Image (cartoon, rainbow, N blue to C red; front, side, top):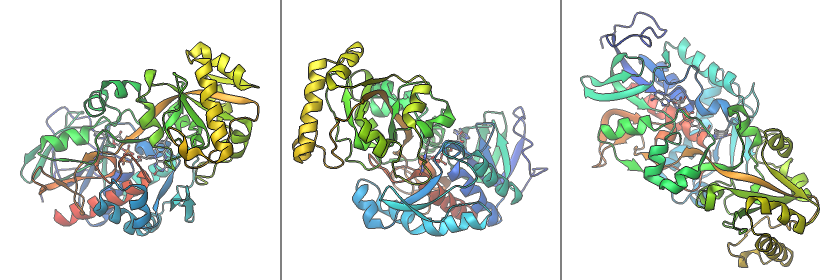
Length: 466
Ligand SMILES: Cc1cc2nc3c(=O)[nH]c(=O)nc-3n(C[C@H](O)[C@H](O)[C@H](O)COP(=O)(O)OP(=O)(O)OC[C@H]3O[C@@H](n4cnc5c(N)ncnc54)[C@H](O)[C@@H]3O)c2cc1C
């Protein structure tokens, strides 16, 4: 294949329209899936260019908890995410342990395997901390660069057209690249209000708080659709968390996430519960119901016992350390109400427009059901972790529904190839990570694991096919 690149570093990201470079594989996105694809394709001998919209590599993984995990068996994954594509799920579960070992073999520092949320197993990125894993992701990019991969920063994929030998790629920086294969790894469309409105409806979209990267605006999805791709999975479903209502810097999104919502009560502005807070073990259903609530705001209600037992010491994985999230939320200016009695807490919530009588009735009914073990009979039910909110002080933290990652996206087959509307592979086109839809849905079980596995798979297939 003809190659007109002059060096292994990107020498066309600043070009103004005239540069034409020919490579085997172009990857859009330098997050976990894009970097795994880059290393995999380069180690198989492909000439690879990575386009990244931001100034630096890492994507959402750089601000994540860094737990790369998946359920330990396909039956566990099917049980937890029955709506997901079983073919993709099988790939995730069967390949993850080997792919983690592969990552380690490239010099990336990972912890020993550990359990995650009682649902799966994974290994954590080492060398950083919760919300700060940019060093790990830079090391991944460095490894790819040492294998000859070119990186072009501030050079987003703008358009992909069919053209011999595969695609003609146009970047935001004005460069044109000719490539045999294109791997879409742009991280989903949670950063695109227009697409969220299209798929979730205006009201839900307006209520969402972005707990992820603003740059993930669905560019991979748009490129795939323009090339004839079909979508897969529930385009209105997403992974996210209930988030404190404040201005939260990117690196604090992870530490401030209240991972103990499943032990608490969520109450909307009308003073009513609206979801079984503990039905989804990773709490991902709560924001999906939260964004349907009036005003898109709701309250995380708990007491001193719940906070001391589960708020600070929650045990999802050691990647999420024990910290005082309540203090951090307060420091970030999040409204937190605190009172010695339910009646006083209800009076405070009155300033938010929550009807005091209704709120008191809701919490008392909930507490009674917890004490009598009849949570299943509540509406909505409460099937596990039913603990009365009664030990002062009592708290109500104002929250919003956070969206981290969309789970519907581009349809791919078991080799990572993008499928057209007739379910046939589009030659040379691949999608990985959150761009590849359908492995999860309303329920979710580890996006970093999926990004690693699907990214490596796409890199391997693209290199083999080029
Ligand atoms: C606070 C937080 C904590 C998390 N913790 C965990 C965790 O512990 N475990 C877990 O499994 N998951 C976690 N996640 C989710 C996980 O980090 C992401 O879902 C995963 O990293 C997605 O990987 P990706 O490669 O698909 O996309 P991303 O990592 O988002 O990468 C996409 C990249 O594409 C770039 N891009 C976008 N558009 C273009 C374009 N047009 N051209 C070129 N580049 C483009 C973006 O700038 C970005 O760098 C967390 C997420 C957040 C935000």
